[in-house]
Image (spheres, helix red, strand yellow):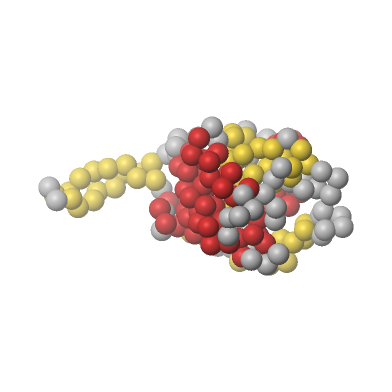
Length: 206
């Protein structure tokens, strides 16, 4: 299943990212804010656990997200601001890291670094800002399932419709929550209109 956000604030923030006048600092902050909204949509129907918390009127039994059962894994480097935003609101969740680099000639991605916790029976949410061909995300999903994850979900800022459909064809049980889907993937596998290279724009490396 994939779900494109219909939130008008999300669309506003995506267009802020598209703006070539948006500097690196604002770009990262905007990605963080979009990620907070996307994760609220993704976790909306999650099961909760009972917890007793102290309040100004004494102990209170409440329902809380079982954050210890969730692992967030950004695809470096562009996924790092997404994780930072999520950690602002869910500071106790576990995180891991995957680093993948796309070959500009072939558009094929290669995994060159990983540091992830035990994923056995965990719900893993992959943070990958851009879904162009879908190849790197598919590789990431495959790798995470090989590590024993019970369920995989993704949060994405921008994707091409063909890339999203390619991921869904390969992994139809993976739920994708995406801020914006663009219609076109050009002949060098860039999303049109897109927003450029998210990693370069976030860290001023272009």
